[in-house]
Length: 165
Image 1 (cartoon, one colour):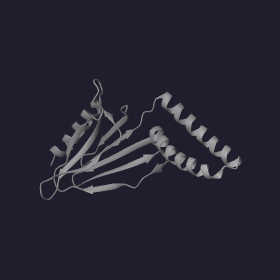
Image 2: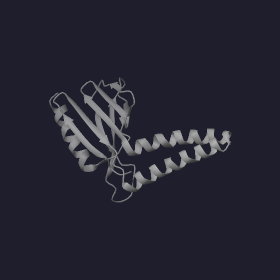
Image 3: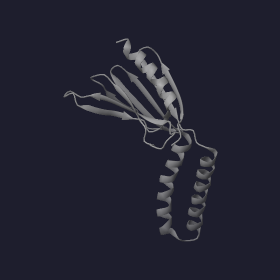
Image 4: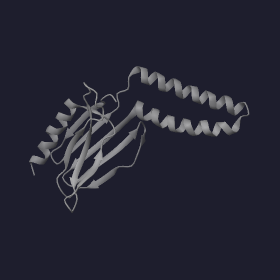
């Protein structure tokens, strides 16, 4: 996956970051074309009297439309303060609920490169902490990929925030 657009905002007591997908022109065109084709097939089968298969195609289109919206307009918002980490996914105009996790100990940020090919610079970001038994707990992992340069910028703000403690 190609690294997305990244913006970080550090405000002393809190840190927020927004990752937005950066689709290529070829991806945009192919997703629009495939969605239009599937909707045309649904209309053709509906008016052609083949109703049973339309249910399966509609179910597929709903899943494919969700995939398309995410890959065209998706974004991820992360907010961190000393006590909690929150994240929210946006599917264009559709916003999923904010998920907040309380943090008892320090937050560790770990880059994860799921694309092991040479030259791949995109990483996902893992946020971990320790539970009451000092066992590592994965708090959250970004869905979108950022570049290593953006990761360094994020880590500078993150380290600045927690060095004031």
